[in-house]
Amino acid sequence: MRVSDKSVQTSENAVRYTHVETGSNKVCFMFSGSGYNYDKPLFYYATMLMLQHKIDCVHVHYSYEEDFLKKGYEGMADLMMEDVNPVINDVLKDRQYDEMIFLGKSLGTIPIAYDLMKREDFVSSKMILLTPLLKFEGMVDTVLTSEHKGLLVIGDKDPSYKEEQLQQLRHSRLEIEVIHDANHSLSVGEFETIYSIKALSNVMTKLEEVIK
Image 1 (tube, rainbow, N blue to C red):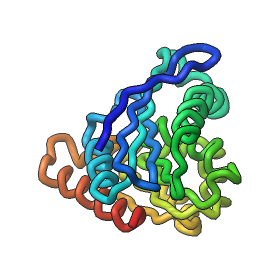
Image 2: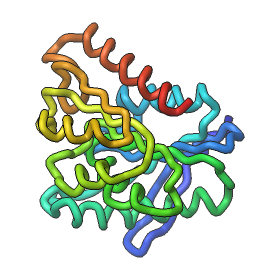
Image 3: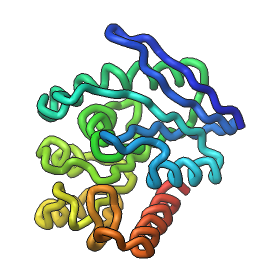
Image 4: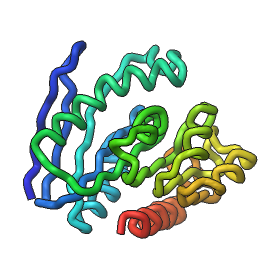
């Protein structure tokens, strides 16, 4: 296994990314949330799971100013794609992958739903949306009309959770998993450690089923 920290220059700045290579013909691009980075439980164990199944991983290390969240769905998506696209292109220019997976958490689900799920290049890719920002109708519409297979996970105590939307999304091609009493980090309760670990285990079990 080889771990490389790299960067790619955009028109505005240099975007760092970490490429973990196992010699696989499969790769998973991961997009972090705001303040929920790759050392946090969902990403840490998702990365371990990918490597267990001989899937290369790419962690994209973008960062944004505080007013970024005020730009709205399209504004945030456009700025994120200016960072995400150059990384994807940089990785794919050196390696030929037969299968690609895109996994995002919270903010990191925006580039997936706004752009990547709509591109012919990635029509056969699997899409993993962890705690997606379903308050944006554009995200819900994209998931409903997408032909992609994958997984959507959200807690029923997440501010973005709406029962009506989840009932709609069950008609999509994504597997839908609702974690009871889980918040936006998919932690259960205030200090319910054992239940939070069980929730994390459940998410990883569902993820493993999807990537096999």
